[in-house]
Image (tube, rainbow, N blue to C red; front, side, top):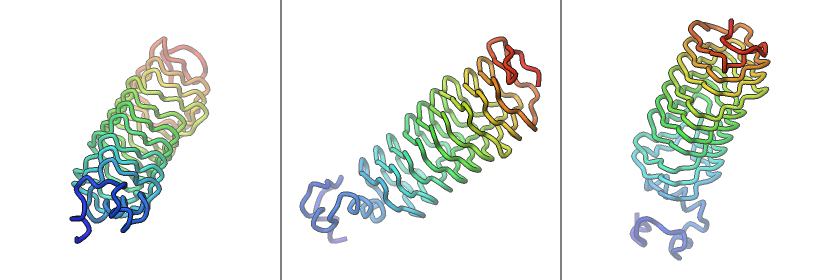
Length: 239
């Protein structure tokens, strides 16, 4: 491309030629992302990147806030420090990716794959997750408060030290928490209708007022006297 040779990589929005051809930081960065496949540290917020193939690109510290990323391919892309707050991540495969400390608050995750992802310390508050796979994900110290999970899979996920305040929220539609660690979670008045809980560690969790109608596969749930059961009594809980 005759323009890419006009300035050195990484491209700077302040360079006159950049502004001459692309007008705005946002439009220019979108062009760089789509044509060059990399845009480290770029502001890509609120851009429509649906279906783009950004595989193998460098998007470390990029800002995808509010961007439409549905169906985007991020295979082997560098995403260290990237921001995804309010982004549409539907259908995106982020399995086994290192997203430690990432801001994904208010993101839409319908049909996304985060199996085995490293999400320790990440902000997953207020997300909208439907048919999302979190199996085996490391969610230590993450904030997952007031999010909606429907038909999600948390099998083997580690929530140790996570901020899980699902007070008055709903986690249903056959969501699977099998073998997950939910110690010290706040699940007050949480609607767990049809959720699956086999092998879940609920020691120290507060489930007072939780709705456990049609709770599926609840064998071997670990509770102790530090657990507050749905009826308000101290554990161990009888399901």
